[in-house]
Every structure is written in C-alpha cells, then in structure tokens.
Image 1 (spheres, one colour):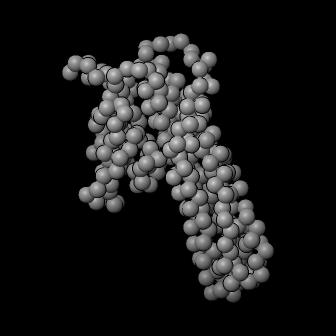
Image 2 (tube, rainbow, N blue to C red):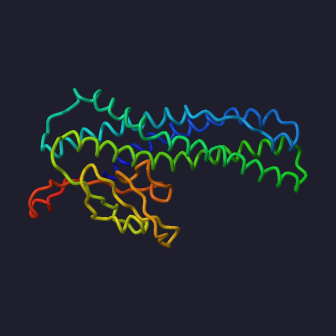
Image 3 (cartoon, helix red, strand yellow):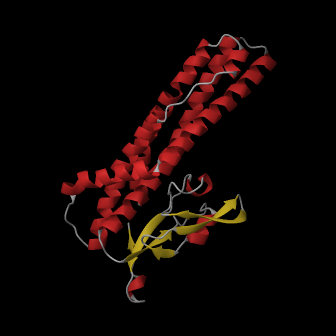
Length: 265
C-alpha cells in the first residue's frame, strides 16, 4: 500500500472512529454528569453498545477492502480495465467478511472503551479527592480526559483498520482470480518494524494457508505463535496488529524462476 493511499484512508476514517467512540461512550458520559458523589461516579455501570464501532468497521472494510480487492484482481490479471461494475459484488463480499471475522475485534474495542473509562474515573476521583475538588469539577475532568482518550484511540484504530481492511480486501481479490497463488508477508521496511514482523518478512505460504506469526513481549520472544491470514488479521493479538504497516504480495505456484515474480500493490 502506498503511503499516500494509506494516509488518505487513515485521515478519512479518524473522524468516523472518533464519532463512533463518542456515541458509544455517551451513556457513560450522561451518568457522569448525573452523579452527585464520588461513590456514584465509581459505581457507574452501563452496558456499552457495539453498534457504533461495528458500523464504522463495516464502512472501513467495505470501502477500503473493496478498493484493494479490485486493485489486486487487476494487478494479478494484468488488466487495466475498470472493474467498477463489480464494485457492489466486492462490497458485499467485504460485508460478509466483517460479519464472519470481525466480531472478536469489535468486542475487543468495546471492552477497551469500558476498561479505559473505569481507569479514568478512578484516576480523576483519586486526584479530585486529594485536591479537594467539588464533584462537578471531578466530573468535568473525567469528560475532558475521555475526549482526549477518544482522540488518540481514533487515530490508532483508523491506522489499524485501514491496514486490516486493505489486506483483507487484497487477499479476497487474489482468491477471486482462481489462480494457483502463494501469498507473502512484506514489511514496510522501516526502522520501527516490530520484531515479530521482521521474522515474517519474505515468508510465503499457500493462498488459503495461515501465517504462523511469532508473539513477542516487548523485545522478548515468548516462544509462542499465532495463526493469521494476513497482516492486520482479526485473528491476531494486539501486539501483532495495532499500528501494523505490513502488506501482502503474491506469486504464482509455478517454476522456481516464476516464483521470484511477485505482485506488489
């Protein structure tokens, strides 16, 4: 994925994910405003709706994924013909992909929203009590902290989902060609590539196979691996998918000479 295309999609989806997080948090924020004591703040317990995040992820995967599905098919087939007539079909396939594969990720994001809310409330209540602040001032600090939290989380989610959607779309496109292909893991070739992905750079597997990706705890290899269909795959843990910039390349399963010919997007 080119930097310009990646940045375009990230910048397009930052406000979308920020709005989704704001809507998801709105029942909690309402309870913060209603709270009349620190005990009431600490006891807030509201079920968070997955739908705002699910809708944002569905939009990202249908828009970004269908673009890369189209591009991959054209690149592998060597066609310059526009496939816009098939866009609806591509988008339908990406919607199916989200339904089948993204439930875990959506629950994970919602769970993080709830966890961070509780951490912020505990922190601001503790500080407020230490400083002798009134309950309305503590509530205002909580709301301000949540707004800041949503800002940087929306950037991180937009980056992660742009990468995941592009590779999911690309892989689906490669599968649609009907050709006998292998897929390869390609890093962004930058200084900040994580250790687990340095190990994966240049690894090829069958198109329908899983990559076995090492799991690191910081700089230390845990001795464990996890299966991923592509960089940014929802099957991966946070340490392997958050802010990832790796992509897929493809090669035909033919002669040893032809195996050196890759399709890079």
